[in-house]
Length: 252
Image (cartoon, rainbow, N blue to C red):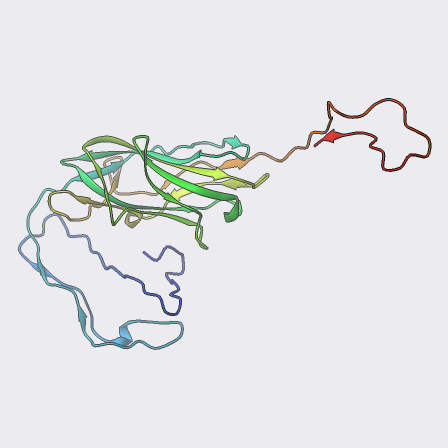
């Protein structure tokens, strides 16, 4: 999942990207082997530059075994819902969902959401991810495509069986009259693995196939200006021909 509509991501010179290919194995499958390879440089498409290396680049061949994996089932209800409004505020609950972990505990590895409202990305900052009211990850800002990524791969959070509440808070620092909405777009954007088998789990929604989990549209209230005479504003007579005399003080 390249996290944008064009299916293209950019790699800056001198940096590296880890690309992982995943496949969902049908429940009725058992006993076969599976492997993935890039057969030739021509199988990798670049907008510019050339591909080099020793081909084929092959992953391991793995045997498919019969197993009952842990499950993650998302609620169809996403908070905030409807069309609420808010002033700029810190720690606004911008996305919340209850997931049910079944069979056995899971290791929660990552969550990626996209902001799809009209607000400028720079008007949102300081993202925090909570599991059952305990902060487990954070992110400073949205990326250039409007995505916020919480990556716990290095230190996954173990989620026990039962209902678990995932919540994201955001600082709204601007955006007068604009709106915001966060969406979990793809099943690959929520990653957790079975604690016994180590295999990643395909999330479901309301005991059925996965569907995107999108909040309602939250509108940031239009800005207002209040002007009041300050309590220490001067009063009384002024000396004739005086200069640089304070006439009044106001608070805006």
